[in-house]
Amino acid sequence: MLGRLNHVAIAVPDLAAASAVYRDTLGAKLTEPQALPEHGVTVVFIDTGNTKIELLEPLGEGSPIAAFLEKNPAGGMHHLCYEVEDIIAARDRLKAAGARVLGDGTPKIGAHGKPVLFLHPKDFLGTLVELEQV
Amino acid sequence: MLGRLNHVAIAVPDLAAASAVYRDTLGAKLTEPQALPEHGVTVVFIDTGNTKIELLEPLGEGSPIAAFLEKNPAGGMHHLCYEVEDIIAARDRLKAAGARVLGDGTPKIGAHGKPVLFLHPKDFLGTLVELEQV
Image (cartoon, rainbow over all chains, first blue to last red):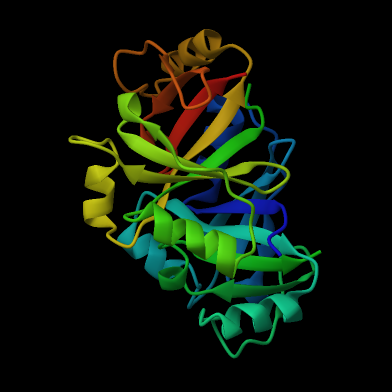
């Protein structure tokens, strides 16, 4: 079921400063910042050739990464996103195995315009897992 | 400078249970556990096709992931490993930029038999970064 690692998301308090770390210090290639008000974040993607790093900065009130940044004010790894071929089949298989799918289990449209779901960190080794249908 | 994402490491308290989550619940392919006493960990690799997830369980006294697991008893994302072509050139560039390289700056031989260095999380968005020469 598990496909490619689509991206690793890193939540950061300051997207411009975080972008400078990857661009200037690490010599990476970055996209321009993209505001996603419906997700409460502004994102920058770093292409590592085989996968992507997604830098996330809170946008607006009630950002889903605000609580994480309160606990981790310097930033930190926020979630892993794996690709699946059929997100409904994946959801049903996971629920049958007793894993918790966040929200009401209905996929939302993610940053890449594809259906996504999030899985409970307590069921996945303390890591928040996003599934994206590709 | 920054190359491919070689792996994402997840520290776990129980490697057998963690392996079952990825193998049985997520349907991933795993390697057999490999004890690395010189690194204080036992590892299992998950091949996602484009990169790898490395599950790490403490091995022996003074494991380098013991403190992390005390803070995160259910486990969690521990570090990101990026590939570089020349680890000495990368180290010198990072030090010149003011970034902190852990230890004495001399590369050690990592889990893949290649030279590795670790960078200070406070200089890299709250994420521990490993560089591996490939």
